[in-house]
Image (cartoon, rainbow, N blue to C red; front, side):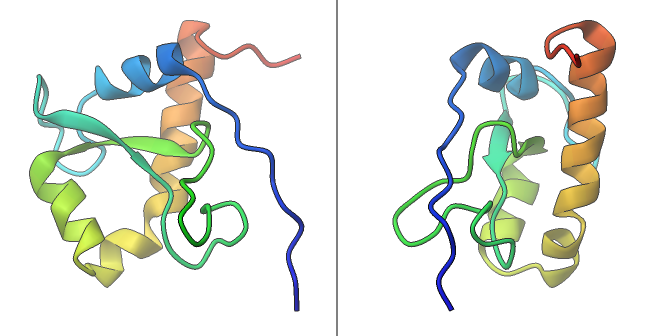
Length: 100
């Protein structure tokens, strides 16, 4: 089964916005929060071999939870979509993303 190639949406301002939010897991704030791109079984939206997911599919995570997710925390991987939806809601509420 082949998946269609998805064009990646890139936005440095959006990534900065996500990185300025508190961690989606523990609410930690500050310089140790990064924008985590969707990972796992959400292909083709989670990127693919050698590709990151679109910047639209990001969530704020502190370094600890970011490493937990990358090293295999199955519960965090299952919650990625929920955390991304929460991030998108904040982005639309603040006007960073506009819904037509």
